[in-house]
Length: 146
Image 1 (cartoon, rainbow, N blue to C red):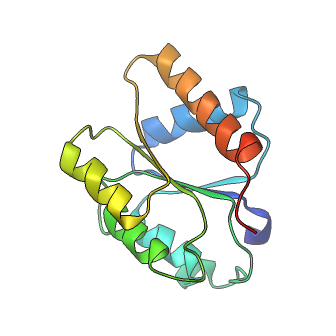
Image 2: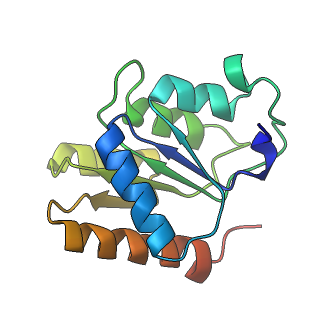
């Protein structure tokens, strides 16, 4: 696979949530190339071109990372901290997309440099609209740092 044309990294361990989110992004008209990984360890391997992703060029930067918090192996919080502390990657917008409404999680994510924190709506209509709005804002309206 050519990993160099990927624009959005989507990190989500729940297959059901991943399927719903990917469907919502496509229904919302997002045509960007999205790559889904199932845990934080795989996300870091992707970012740093290790393991299965060693053929990916480290020079190619993503436009957006959608990141769940509660995952096996390496948590989303750890992924956020690693990426935002790396000068090579810290300008990539990271949107936390999680079911956690816990104030300490929200506060810590913003302290670590998250660009947005979105609690996944339970109701499917609200979920689709939230994801559509999210994709429109981050991929069309937002002007990234050069």
